[in-house]
Image (cartoon, rainbow, N blue to C red):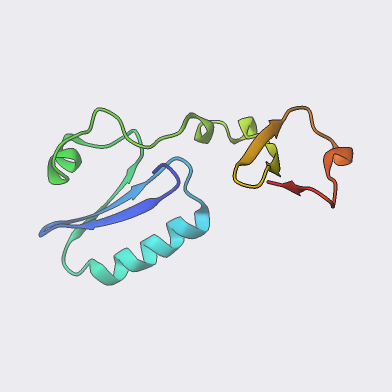
Length: 112
């Protein structure tokens, strides 16, 4: 997924693949792990979207598509969603409430 960082160790190269949505803390942790695994290998950091043909060959070929959600391109497009949960005994429903506000929060009801 675009929020992740992966470390791939081969015989000669240690790849660090960094997704577009990866947080700095995760990137730093992955680099620390890679340093422990490196040995005599050359390290190659690859940013999502800039993968080399050699990298794709190493993991078995480039897929038609992979998890790179559009909202990771512009995090400002994330919006909260509000669902009111109701039950009729055997059926449980979760209905989305659009244009919600503080008054929609009722302590006698269940919401997600």
